[in-house]
Length: 233
Image (tube, rainbow, N blue to C red; front, side, top):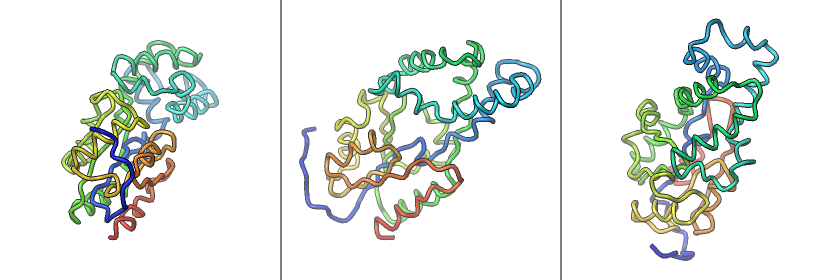
């Protein structure tokens, strides 16, 4: 489709949601490390084997892994294919002395198992659906997240799921947002984008889509009730 240009803001008829750090959190990094440790077939636990101080330092680092990765992949190329996603991940992890090749592979293989919905995610989505709003998931991701959607109880709540590696475009590119608007059959002025990242999700604002940014939170609540207030619930 062609760029529509700005239009008059009207009642919000559709909400576009980012996924990671907006509807789901990647979970406790210590749990992620422990799962990977077991998955790699290693005895004991990583705290004892690495030492508590080294374990905590590594947990803090992997907790922000997708922030670190921007240093080597600023244009989100990893989110255009599963092959490139793994290549970028491997390149990043190669620079971490505490993580050998086997543990790195195990971390990647169990990565999605710790992703959990924020406690206010499902209630928000369900109330929006009940009120007749159209919903889309629009995510920069190089992996199939269908299993996470199903485990979180979200799989049937979206009218459209737009994943960057499937459409060949990444936020903040206009095309990925335009794809969502087309599928939902709404104009930019009828939509609200909800995300956590000003660089990526802020691309919606350039199309005239009202945009709400909620930075990643550490608790189980993410403050998604503000979405309901914005659409007039």
